[in-house]
Amino acid sequence: MNDERLTASGDHRVTIAIPCFKQEAFLFECLNSLIAQTNPAWEAFVVDDCSPDHIIDRIVASYGDPRIHHIRHGTNRGLAASRNTGLQAGRAPFVLCIDADDFLDPEFLSVTLSKIENQDADCAYTEFQLIGLANDVWRWEPKSVDEFAKVQWLPGSGVVMRRSLWERVGGFSAELRWNEDWDFWIGAASLGFSFERVQRALYFHRRHADCRTASTLPEMTEWITREAILKKRAAFFAKEDRAAHFRSSGLLTSARASRAARRRWQSIRLTTRAIAANPKLLFSQPLPNPRPQFRSSFPKSSLLHRCEQESKRVVWHVIKKYLAMDLADIYTSDKFREPRNWHALAPMVHQTYGYLSHDYRVLGKVIDKIRARSVLEFGCGSGRLVPVYLMHDVETIWLQDLSHQALEFCRQRFFCQQNIRYCHEDVRKIPTSAAIDLIVANRVLQHIVDEVELMKVLHYLVSLTRYFYVNEAGMEASWRDPYLKGRDYIEIFYGLGWRVAERGGLTAEDGTQHRWMLFADSRKIERATSF
Image (tube, rainbow, N blue to C red; front, side, top):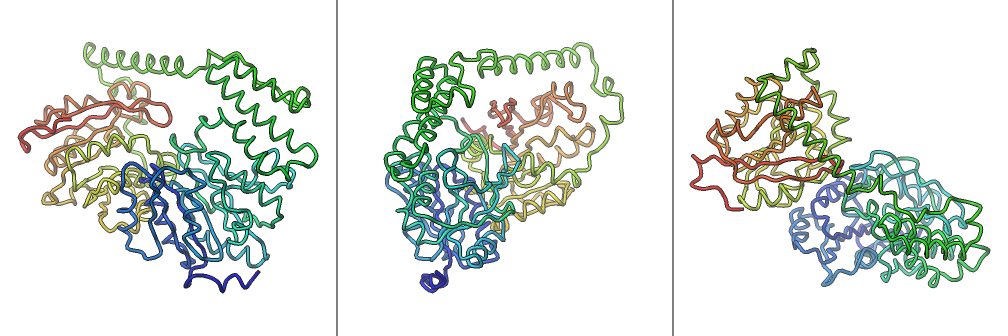
């Protein structure tokens, strides 16, 4: 097997396939992680699976790295076909698939390749560090071959394997739009293969509202996908009761999804078929209750949440307007006015909020509408919104934050992007000649408790720009959290001679409701942009 190293095209050791469909915003961090690898002997093929925005080619070209290539499908062909396209385009002896919204630790390739060669294995993988909506670690504990009939215990992306293994299995099954990873490893198990596990989390897997692993929609047709795999891998499932386990668990998964979608009779039918396929289910595990649990259904909880937020807003309005009280009189403890140590909090804030993407679309539309080519983000944190600026062709990006540690996180994430300028602490370090088109304040002004200090900051910021995007806590926020200072920003900006050009609402990935506003300086523009 060691002679496989000599067959590489040029000096490339690993061919990397990066399928991308509507995940352009995350592609920067993915490609940056490749360039940061301690082992530079790789070639990458970004496969655009007919994304509607037509910007993936520009993103790839912006790197100017001959190792990174772009391929576009004429039609949407799915994840499996995109992986095959990328791997077929290269000739390196090892192959790797990465999802476009994931990224690698700098040591990922060095560690996995070393593991394969030292142990003469067919493939190697690491543990997954989840980011975004979750922060735990997926261990991917090794199991027996028989367990593939019950669970997929090897990941699809994030596994470095010999090209010969991928070719022997026949690549990923392009006819499958779900469970293509599971199908591949069942095929590998049928042929026999060896693997090594690295007990370090070197692969970062993003969990967000639009990612496949966070979606429950494919579960409705889980049983159909499994029937296709049963037919294709008949030799593997011919042994013992593998087929019964595989088929029945797929039927139960679809039954639970049908129950959640309030398709009661479909849930009953699928559950009955699961019992017929594997009667042991009656004694081994609880079966789905076909009756939906209306008490915990999403529409009702969402309505209650909105009512709760509205009631808090009304209470605060009464206190502020009619009783002429300030929350400083209610929260008399020093905690309300105590400044936070943002440098010490930076790692926690980065891990909790640094990878959320719920407002990317809204902010992107604002940038496009006002044709912003220079943006200043006040209180940028670890650079959560930077992908939006990059994706929408912002030429100059100013990032300001009180925490040096937060800015260092941002530098590490976007070290390849040369149009980013950093400002630590005092925003007045940014010259008035910077010609900034848009200033973004996203959940940061709410932490400035002192009103005098806030107005000093705002007076300087509005002198730099024509537009100001605000996504901050409203007045009712102070009622529920003494660390936040909620305000009426429409009233504040009106006093500065600004007016609202557009406003709207959005739902954060944790379910909370945010209100955003775009303010325009009527003295610097003849008229606000029509939205």
